[in-house]
Length: 619
Image (cartoon, rainbow, N blue to C red; front, side):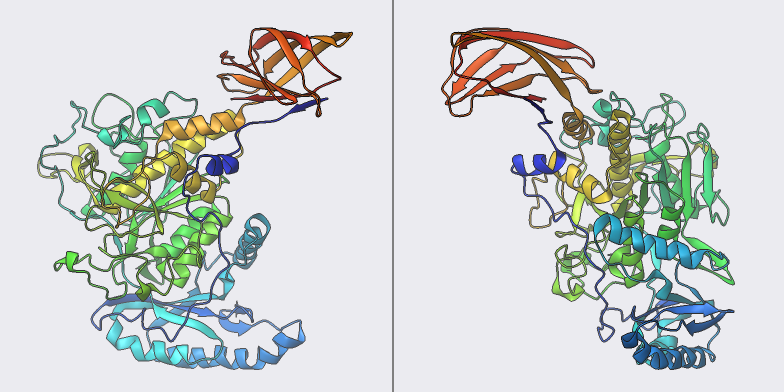
């Protein structure tokens, strides 16, 4: 009897490695508490949008551009239908005094298939991950024609929250880039790259403070040829000389690409996509089929930034296994104000999945099969603090995304003070001294030839980890592996990454190791089979066995087991393998390296009481 199996499965490897892994299961959507003061903003905070999330017991929809409630089809829901309908009418009355326009919270308001798309995403979450997601069609955005201040609308938000059918209404905090220094042509001690010089990108190195891209690129697909990557950001200069080698797709691109607002997105794109041409910098996945970029700025009736809408919409046009990264965050989280802030304007900044809409957008993208990475933000805060009401507790709420913190660029690998931290932050990369595109001096250099060696913050960390994740995903697909989900990628980076060795009380997870992750995937993909001949006479047996590598990867050895079902065998000789007898089992081992399709042979003879069951493992 022949049983053939694979020795390394990723789930098993997580256990066998003895690694304390992060919680690796998405969670059902947990309704928000509208009586919480956590969403209160300073009176002078600029607001572009209010989010209204209705309870999922009823279906709030737009009927001929007016908010309505669809008739319920069960008795319990019919009992609440009248109240919900009154609340829809009451909301219309409440907002009539304000210069706002009500549109769906997700997607293109003009898309006739919007409701069906949102329902399909919700269904995928249940089918693929077994989770109950929020009804995306029950989110609505009140867009202000002109930005206002929170103090002018706080009473309106309170009145909306009094409606029984409203789960929560809140002003979306301002969205900003997560860089700590926006005037950054160069960093101290780091030469600025140029068209004639290669910049220092030690974050790519095969060292304890690099992501091992150099070895990662040696794997088939390591430069991203089998995956697509989307950056969700502000704006981008796709005419930079280091980006023109790729075709591109830009969605909701607004504003002038030759401007400071485009620097941030261009810097993110440089880390990911910059051409491998022995000048300037080299992107981690510079061989992706397409440079994809989605601007988080919308112009529909008015212009506003909408991170949740952009993330969900970006996922809708990507394919299973693709990667999305976002280096944006909210500027106005709860007022924790740790002493490390020391007056920093970034104090209390918070990841996008903090809000109800941000969390649902992130979970929707993951449910669509996308690997999602988001910056932890530069708020100096512990995301495990009780002030956040378990919003970042993976045992309570888990979107499935990889949240990225910022680490030091030296071998200390500690947490940079500004980086948010805690158990929700599961991966890290450089948060300063990052060489990439953009942020040069426009008075002396063309916009299309600008470089910096000082990109920073969780803004630089997130695309570095995203590039590593994309490289790993591309390698996996090149091996024939099914695309990793965002949760599986998160676990794999935790398993194979380089652990944080300093500032352990401010946990920001592991730094990816592309090469180590690829080796685990290769081991998981390895497959071998076995054929054998047995000759027995008078209790003496002779076995000749052939082991064949039938996978696409290189085998570094194999183990064959002969089980005699309670009978004690005696091995008298072997050829081509090392034999060990343990009770009724004979274990034969070889470290012969076998390329795909190659065979190895061995034979053994001895006293064998009865027939054996053969099992083969390859590694």
